[in-house]
Amino acid sequence: MALNLISSSTASSRLGLVGVMLAGLCLYMQYHLYSLPRADFTGLEYFEDSSNSTGTRYRVLSRSSSAGGARAELELLVRPSAAGFYPKLPGSMPYHSHAQQEESLQVLSGTMGYSLDGRVANASAGEVVLLPAGSKHTFWCSGSEELLLRATLAPPGPMAEAFYENLAGLGATYGDVSRIHPLQLVVLLQRGGVQVEDIPRVMSWAIQRLLVPFAKLLGFKAFHPQYVSAGAAGLSEELWTCRQFLL
Image 1 (cartoon, rainbow, N blue to C red):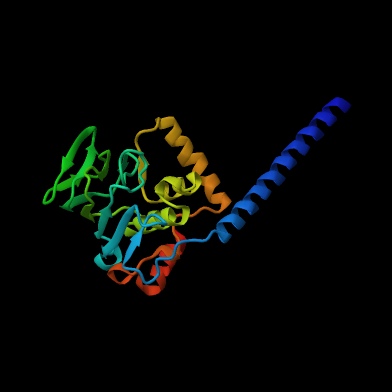
Image 2: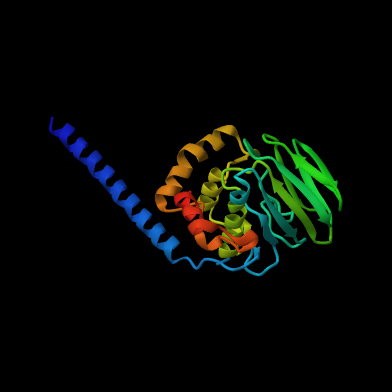
């Protein structure tokens, strides 16, 4: 009986200690995120995803809010020196899919490498690559010259152009996109409707169901008002009601 009481008391103490440590971690991370010197795109038409302007430059051409949520358009200038999620693929995103979003990538100059449902190819100036909803894809600058392209999202994903503004803002804040805090990255990808496809399904499930809620508990969020650029007149109506209460 006494032994059971001691064991129960010990277990409660351990749980209490874990709770205190978790609360301390939450407070520390919230303070860290609050005090983090963030990039600010306010008033900028062009914005960069790196702190030294060697990565990808973006410009919002049209916002989903001005098209009834039906489409958004961006211009991307991907430099051969741009950091990406794959070291040898400048400006690359993770190999991913979107359940809702469809993309059209029009190459204006330079050469774009891309992978679409396992097929790897290049697209040159004047070519358009269509990325249907559900397709697995990524793209990058595959030439020695800068890649300039127009991306049309129709329909756009849950965050539309704000996904790219926040991706760029986080890249500029942390140095470049390859240095974004992993917990911050999973929150952004999840809220943007981006399903990473080159990891095991069980790991993807764990990220969505366990890691993302934990990251949000620590204070990571997908939308930051200071990353809203002035492209296509920025967001109206008080940052579109602060992007639906910070998404």
